[in-house]
Length: 248
Length: 332
Image (cartoon, rainbow over all chains, first blue to last red; front, side):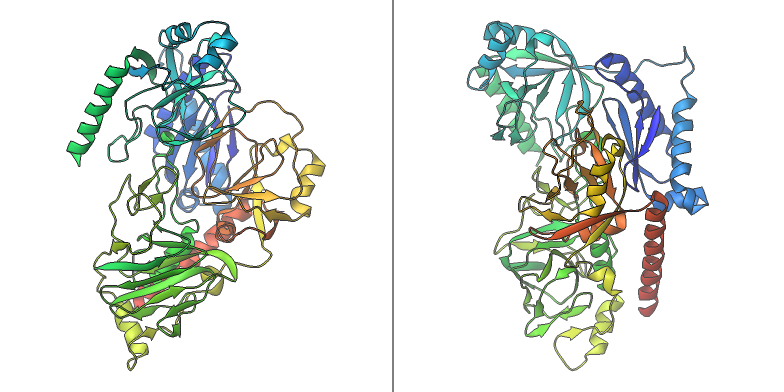
């Protein structure tokens, strides 16, 4: 475990050194630290953000300095508190299993939405329908949310489907697009630029700032994709739009 | 009660002190790129320091109000006029309904923060009135302002500011205060700035000569800089090892170095995580200067300790608190 400053108003707690060796165990350890820090409510801490192997702690140095009493020891004070909190509850046997429900995400893999599925299939030496079969069979886990609000970086992609990012990123990818970038899969919540290989699209909304929480997913959750037809996509998209407008 | 934009200018948006609490869901901090400047401007018009104002980039803005308002601004070296009178940076002006306020193009720096008594009245979304331009929400319809936009204002507080500015120029329609805030608070832009930094988590991934380049040479601000970050041309900074890094949090002030070797200084709208090495971080008090960098500017970096970064911040906050109390005493 290592604590490094991220500027003068944040620090990074590195819970593990590696991720890919043991993604499940690493994520559990990181999310446990994240929850411990949330419950601890250390004075001056503004917010926390987990990512793969680490938890970032954002703090107000002015508030922390008041607790630290010696202003020059501000960073030491908060680093010590963070370390103590995370070291506190790790007695073996007392680890409570992190609750993580599986969220099903309907995806239409039709050619219209799957602009790069042939590239993914070609690289794996399988057919596009086998790509769909594989992608929608496995279970994934949200390793981190980032890039844009609500974008899930999903771990658990079958190795066969790993495909390097496109050499030239697209300037605009439609919201809901499901893609593969290296060994990860993910979903673009908003129309945005991006370099991942597109293999389908979900009609679900992944980010809605009018809702609380504003995102469909958060770090640690499990995800499964369900293949749907173009008609189902249209029906679900319409239902989603109707729900949004009825709330306004 | 509203502000009417005759010309919206090059890039103007509604901003407050930013959006905290949602970084774990990928939502950027955002807000005024120099939150300190907006806080000072807000105090000058009798607002709470966190009221929403306008962030103005490169000027070109012309606006008026539907009722009487106090205004103040902080930022780069802009020519600002109220009717035919100049409104210097860090002074407070009283505008009659319909009177025009104009921002010209800046001579130095690129951004200004305009506070209006009462504040801009847009809905609070995820705890903030800031516009998230990248994700398209918050602020005024989630976008930059356009010509002819009419933006609602909150009722002016029955604050001292009105009375005071009026008292200073009882005979003219337009009152401009003689009092102001410290000059380096309201006008942080300089032609050849030096930004102070602390070492980043990946400092040791660069060799000594590369690290020296960061502190010994000047960088030039590239034209493709925006609210997400300042891209820097000049000395290229290469890592010792080329191993893939695991993505971690980044934050405004982070200097990250992509494989091109051209560093990027992240600003308020930056992503919440990044996979490039974090070489250094510009300290909080110097983000005011960073927010003024524009294409072609030359910038240098110098290292300070984390303790010094905190000392500088504490000192500024102490003075700010004194200033805030001073202003509130004047109102009684």
